[in-house]
Length: 117
Image: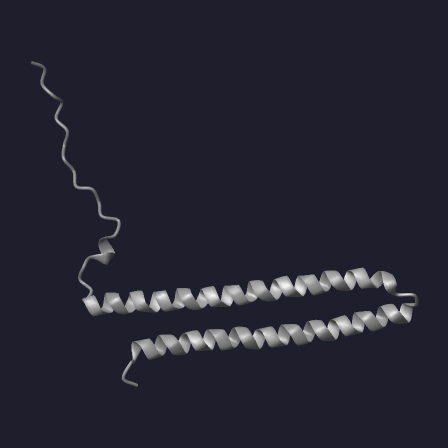
């Protein structure tokens, strides 16, 4: 009977060695809760940004179709000025909404971390 070649048994290195189960259970639970809250808040911010960009692009396209109605250069300049004012106003309002969403998410995370406070 032929002898099988000897294969040295080597331990597979643990790529997650730094994550040995030495963390207290409550610390792992806290990390999980914080990450879950962060992911949910990020999803809300992303949804708001997508909604804003879709609306803004639709309004921008609408403006370009109206450019053809301009009969005089003054009409064109007036329309551009109205567009710029509208654009700036929209982005400033959206910026405030995004900051409020991030603040709400941070507040929720802090409230979850310190329920007694």
